[in-house]
Length: 115
Length: 111
Image (tube, rainbow over all chains, first blue to last red; front, side, top):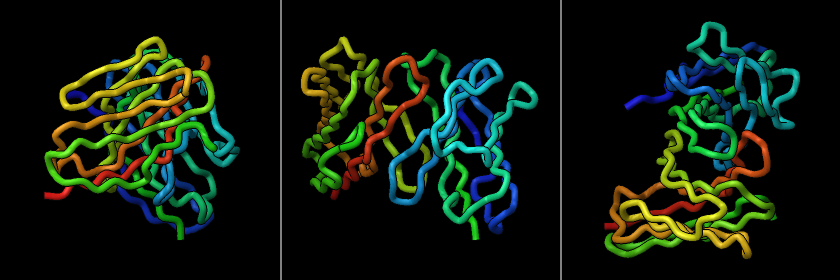
């Protein structure tokens, strides 16, 4: 069964360092998302991406964050200068259907620990 | 309260019993979805109910939606120990792309 894969599964970094989280969405999907979950809290939307551009972003997704689909298969989330409060599980998701119509398929997540 | 709040926050039942989780939301929705998350793992889609639907079944799962009360319930019948997980409702609203997740219900099914 097709699945969304994420790497790394866990990354530890120092505050102020740049981090890139990688995702390979399901191959025929067109809509891509990043969500995050701080330990013990709810899953929060960060950004959605369609047709090679951001279609929606949350207040969390400030100038320190960026997304890219560099080669038609990978979908990356970059955090330019990490803060302690960026420590969280980051989930990539993809969907084959347009907004408001279908389910999202989530990866297993990348756990980011900022020291 | 926030868009998507589940109750109870935690539920502990015996294997074989039914588990019911509720979700309330505040704004009009396109659809409401339920997801499951095992500890430390990703989210797995369980079922989607559209705003014009009132009830949906999938295996041992039954979801209801009451748009007048802005609420949904997830019923898991004949629960198993393997059903132990957190369950989240998520709403899709307006023309946006995002899902707004609720606070989740931690279900523990004991042998």
